[in-house]
Structures are given as C-alpha cells and as structure tokens.
Image 1 (tube, rainbow, N blue to C red):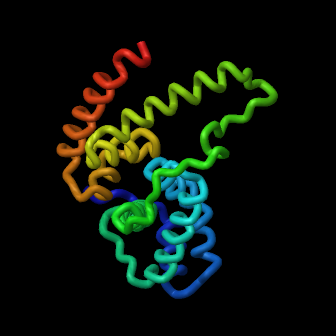
Image 2 (image 1 turned 120 degrees about the horizontal axis):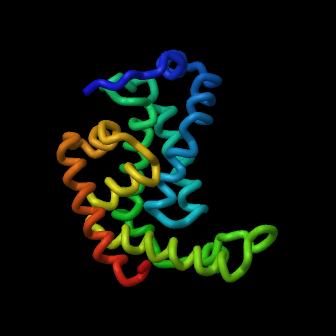
Length: 187
C-alpha cells in the first residue's frame, strides 16, 4: 500500500533533511493549509489553531532530519505531529471551555452575504460540527481526514494506524451516526 510520492516533494524533503531552510519553507507553504484546517476543526479556535500549527512546523523542522519514507506523503507525517499536539493540548488541562465573542460568528456580513443567510448558514455549520464532535474520537478523526481534508482511504489509514478496510467500516458507521443525529435538524 505504498503511495507514489511526487519527485518535487521527495527532493524538497531530502534538501530539508540536509538543513536547506528554503526547501523547508517550500514544504511549509505546500502543507500549512492542510495542517491548519486539521487542527482548527479539532480545537475550534483560530488563535489556538495558529499556535498549534506553528508548533507542528517547529517540531517538524527539529525532526526533519529523522524523517523516513514509510509509504506515505510528507503531509501525513505533519498531520500525525499535529494530531499528537492536539491530543497533548487537551490532555494537559490547558483546554478551557471559552469562546471569545469574535469567534461566535465568523462570517462576513457585507457584499453578497445577506445577514439572514449568513446566520442560517452559521447555525447549520455549527450543528453539523457539533454532530461530528459527538461522534466517538476515531469516527471524528475519520470524518475530518476523509471529508474536511479530502484525504484518501490509504492516507487516512496511515495517519490513523489502521487498515483501509477498517477505515471504510469506521467511515460507514460515522456517516450513519451523523445521519441519525442530524435527521430532524436538517430535514
């Protein structure tokens, strides 16, 4: 189950492993959105997601010399680091159930956006995200990786340390659970 790694990524990683900061910067540019989106969905806070994304790349920079190809993309390695940071964050007790008022409604209300539509869209998105957060942790991670990040079954299996068949079953159960949870809300 080895994936083809693009030659440009392979070259950039090899250069970064030898201390080429420009190559690591290019890798950063290529993967920062993937890592940020993964973290943001898990923590639900832009400032915290930015902090954990920075920490992910700082750890990756420190450990890039130790990176070895294990049949997965460099991005999967970065998401694994991010996953561990998010887990550590929630375990550490630094997590607080606080939401600043600036994060309550993060939808622009000018231009083509009609305020009523923006509010309805925000409510629907919030409900869907709450339903995903109500799934068990493995189902949550599967849904986030597969649908929010668009990763393949193989990539998701590598990140989660499972076989593709197990990911298919996990995904199926998660979708069924979401359908039950959202049945009345989004009908």
